[in-house]
Length: 146
Image (cartoon, rainbow, N blue to C red):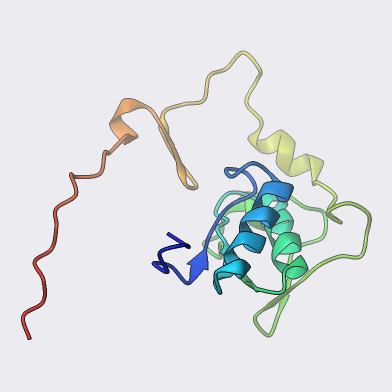
């Protein structure tokens, strides 16, 4: 899609595209084609911060999604809450990703190891046949008539 000039922004996610290094490679490749990187994050604060570090490291870094729907895995997973001021997510200077996990939140939402994940929709992931809604087949749109 980049070679064809079909997109201006790539939206990888470190949790789904192979990690920090791979998302950085995708951003560098996008830069070669004049595109920006605005990472996709809709799962948890650690993923969001990892994506934000990648975006901040790229000359073509554009944005990082921040779930503001009251998701406890975004709002309560870290000891220090995300610092968003004037539309900017401020990153820590602490080692690594600069986050410390809130053990109380982890324990509240932890499933016992022997317990399977219950069917349902969680963030941007779905588990169970009732929640697996396949996309309809692609249909070509007619060419505009003007």
